[in-house]
Each structure stands twice: as C-alpha cells, then as structure tokens.
Image 1 (cartoon, rainbow, N blue to C red):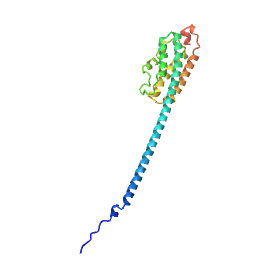
Image 2: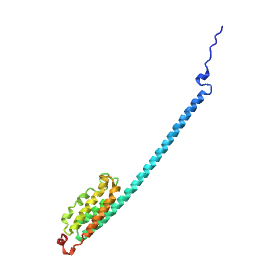
Image 3: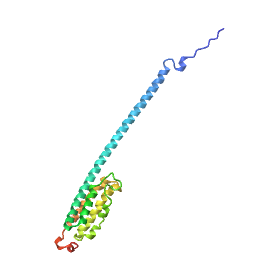
Image 4: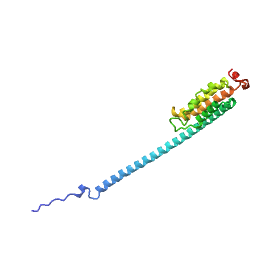
Amino acid sequence: MTNLIPLPDDREHGDDGHGGGGAVSVLATERAAFEAARAARARQDAAEAAEAERIEERYRAQIAAAVGIAAAAAGRAAGWVEGLAARAGSRRLAEYAAAVSACGRDLDPEDDEEGGVDENLAFVLSGLVLVHETGLTTGEGLALAAVGAIALAMPRTITVDNDPVGQLPELAHHLDQAVAAGRAADVAPHAAGPASHRS
C-alpha cells in the first residue's frame, strides 16, 4: 500500500495571495504615517526658525534705534563741552568732548568686551580734567562730571548688563538732563574771571 505524504498548505506561509498583501499594506501605512510625521516636524522646525529670525531682526532693529538715540545724545553733550573748551581755550576740555562723543558714536552691541568703545577713554573722562579747569562755574563742573560718568556707562550696558535696548535711551535722557543743568549753570559773568565762576 502506498502512503501519501500530505503537501504543505500554502496558506500557512501566506502564499495564497492574501496574507502577503496584508503585510505590504501595513508596511505602506506605517511608512506613510512616518513620512507624514517627518513632514509635519519639518514644517514645525521651519516655522520655529522663521519666528526666531523675526525675533532676532526685531531685536537688532531695537538695538540700532537705542544706539542711535545714545549717539545723538552723546553728540549733543559733546557739542556743549566743545563750547566750554572754546570759551576756556582748553585742550583738555576738547579731548573730554571728543571722548564723550566717542562713547555714543562708537557703540558696538557685538563687542562683549569693550562695547566698541576704547577703554582708554575712561581716563579722559575720569574727572581729573576738572581739577585743572578754573574757568568753569561750580554748576558747570558738576554737569561735566555727570556727563563723563553717563557717557562711560553707555558701553557698560553692553559689556556688563547686556541690556542696551532698555538702558541706552534712559542714559541718553540723563545725559540731556546733565547738559541742560550745565547750560543753566552758565550764569556767572565770564569776563569777571575765574574767581567769580567759583562763587
């Protein structure tokens, strides 16, 4: 008697044309979901990058505006000091005026070490110049000292506090106030000589 050996059922191996197709369908679905997630992530990354760029551009514009305000105020203060230098024929005051102007004109928000301003200006604006200037009223001398201190504070908004946007306009306002006080103090008759200026 011949024994018949049963042949394997193809359906157990997914070869009936249905099982394999199902696996391919699952893989296709998973791949589509993966691609969709990756595309969504790419769109999100692009949106975040664009927003970060907009924020950076806005901040750069704010810094530029703040630096412009500071430079203008420093220029006005320097103009006042130049007037004093011309009146007194003082080279020291002329250098003081140039240093005040530089503290606003040369500001560089990208310079974390000096703020774009030569650190040697600190010596020029230290107030020692006032010791040698006898042709100033007391009020003018005080205003000059304030102008120098405020001008020196401008680059420090970058190197120390890192808040030029918030602080430079405020310092510019104080600089204008110091100059106004100095102009108001110019009341003594200069022709009377240095002694009257110290009264």
